[in-house]
Amino acid sequence: MDFILLFITTTVLLFSLRKVSKIRYSSKESILKDVKNNVISLMWGVLIILAMILIPYQVWVMTGASHYWDGVYIVFGTAILTIIVSFTFYYFNVKKFNLRVE
Image (cartoon, rainbow, N blue to C red; front, side, top):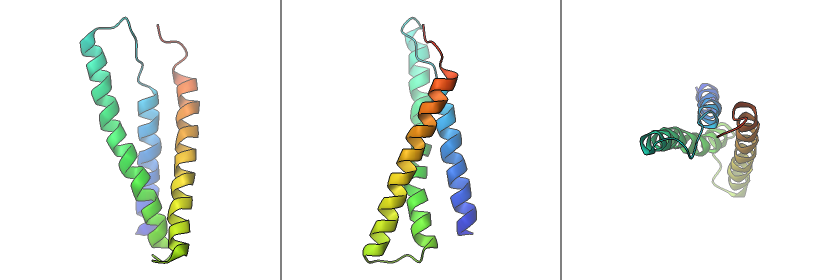
């Protein structure tokens, strides 16, 4: 069950990052379009933050849920790895989908 939840959470994180990277912001659009883009970004952002919290927790549970320093190393190592992978994935998707915003 823990592996399934970790897989689902990772998939949700990557899917949400891809959706956020596809949003195009423009200075020539109307205010309502900007508000819509901001609301969409916030909704996907909530899923991203929840996934970034749940992934280190699930890895901690799968490794035995230690309450000592090894548990701290596992949680923070997984959190740092999750953040690095997320920023890298987001960067390459923005580079791929948003060629030019006018």
